[in-house]
Length: 103
Image (cartoon, rainbow, N blue to C red; front, side, top):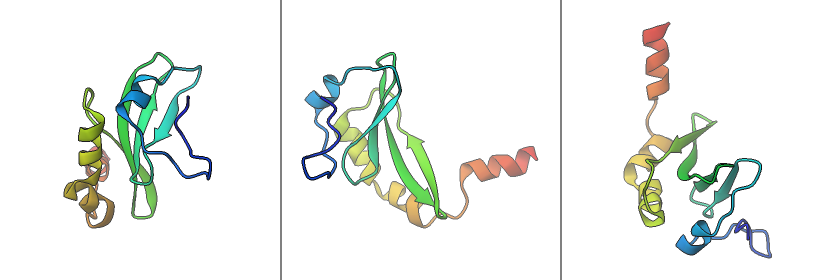
């Protein structure tokens, strides 16, 4: 069971059981939770983590969430106002601050 799409091609919402039943393969996979930008990342060794994909200044970005959180907590983090701010309003990213200090 991959849990990636429905019959009409739309992404499925993940469940705790579906995540628990995911089996590691030879390659790293990202399984979507629908259209909210949340993904489960499944490593070849079996480790699972959550990440949120979004766009910043027109460029794709990924924020990896802390290890050990539940699906409900990951959904809450992805929907938090701070994520909405980072997706739309913030003009200076932490990575750009590092570049200025190091270069």
